[in-house]
Length: 390
Image (cartoon, rainbow, N blue to C red; front, side):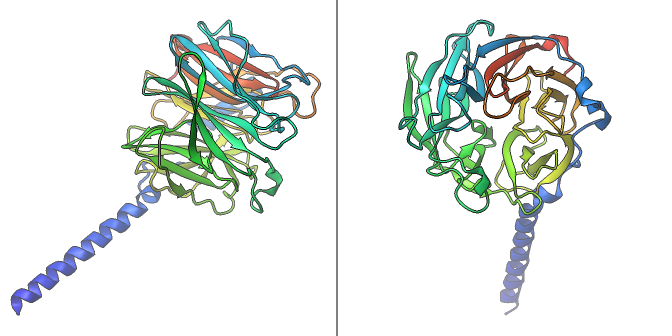
């Protein structure tokens, strides 16, 4: 009898220990942050006045110039290096953003200065009078081959967010360059409007997505380019129920950082943390990093420094700026990549803006691609030996 009682007690103790361990693990992302995720600027005063940020050294080149009524709208640009060239893809239509004739174009350059004439990566799926269209969603190299991602949709009813489907028929497709042309490799992820290509997170690949209702979730897959994708919703109770366009990176201390646009118009970036490579996420927090409610981009340089590119003027998408961090937590040394946007050529909406950045380190420089006035695709070269990145 005594032996049986001892076994029962041991079983009870073991069960209790495993329960405590499981609870601690589940709560770890919310409780174990070594820093305050709301504080992203080493010195908030460094961002003011934002219109007088020091201009980064460098030079700017035009990749594609929009012509009203022909290819007047150009946005969603992405850049990658492959086969001794820089490659850029973007969304384009004759008049307005996400019109039903929207397709994806691409251009290449050996030196980043002279760019090829834009070519079609994937054409309008059903003609300008029918609803289907494409949105460029990423450009990256995987297993030695250049990959491009494009979102297929049949609607773009943003005013219906939280009420009805915004992106009807949403599917993310993958295209692969075979040395001569782009091959359609089929559906990459269903019901996914990603913001950037998947990144290695621990033993899996991950990418934040928004579903057809614009709800944010984390997609993870053990196999790049194939799936299947597991989905973890990012808890987004008010005031974080309108999170948009997340960027993603990991730091050596084991944290995954999601930097998010706040479409609730707080004019600040949102920061969300995970301590298990994106399997579970802490609740979002509003940061001290100013933002114009636009798309941001984060990356890591070869010297180990992190960078963050956004529009830090809360009132407009000008300037386009960059700041740096040695550890991915606190950012400093902000510089303007571009400022004082030129007037927009005649068009229906917008103007006076630089937006939707993406970047790649290439031949000792950081090459930042973006859209000017949602009309032109331009790229700025920032020589890394001319700036302080630590």
